[in-house]
Length: 172
Image 1 (cartoon, rainbow, N blue to C red):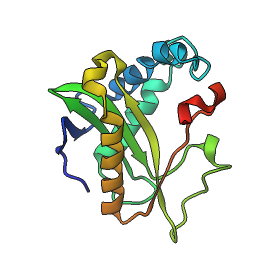
Image 2: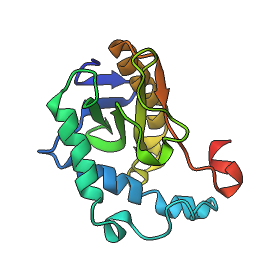
Image 3: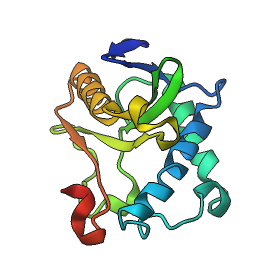
Image 4: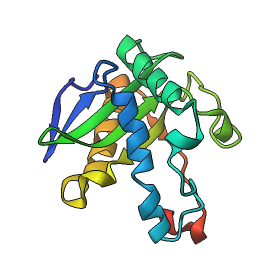
């Protein structure tokens, strides 16, 4: 497993902690995207209302990620790791890696296969409220961190999904 405090140029990546209410950061980071998504014509992705106002179970779901991460289970069905990237102690991005894909992508991403396992990148989000000067490059840094973590597990693939609306502009 990647070390608990890993320096990536300008970013420190640390495990998410329940005691620090990091599960709430995951919700805040998502909500910080709404204005930007609207300005690039992708407001239809998540709408205009903060998820904490429209989905009463969101904190429960993000808390479950952090709880599973803190359990530090070995690779298997219960494995999950949640991380926060910081710059000068300011949270700038979050990452969640999971041993299972969510139900909504099961038509595309298969169930786990011991012969060819994968880690599912369940969450990768920047904190737009922290400002671009702090967040720039944090997504790429967390992808590198995820690749290192997965490689250390001996797993060969990372799977993820992304929204393809807005004329596929978000994936180009």
